[in-house]
Length: 112
Image (cartoon, rainbow, N blue to C red; front, top):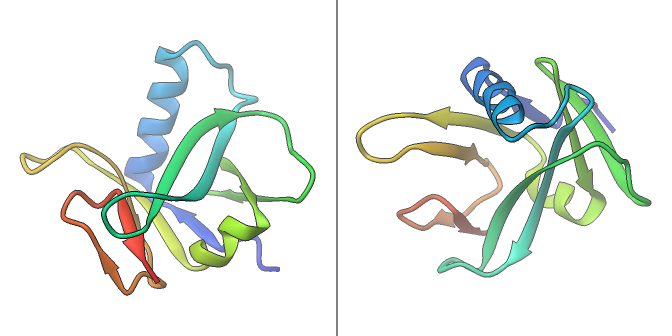
């Protein structure tokens, strides 16, 4: 598999680094990205800090950010870009997912 299956923008990279420091994690921690059932569109994104690869994980590194993702979630995330916005309409991480057939207004859930 291509190790660039999930892209990280410069803005997202900066906010990951800031949050890692604020929450007391060292640079050995990356992001665990997963997809779970729920939300108003059926599937939701989940982000956590993690530093340990688990059985069945695919480890991706883009733009200096290490990403741990299980294979089931990766099927939904191929080609996705993780970005961050601090705009007036909302602040936080969001996913530009080409696999999503629809997303909810908050951007936290999607359907394929």
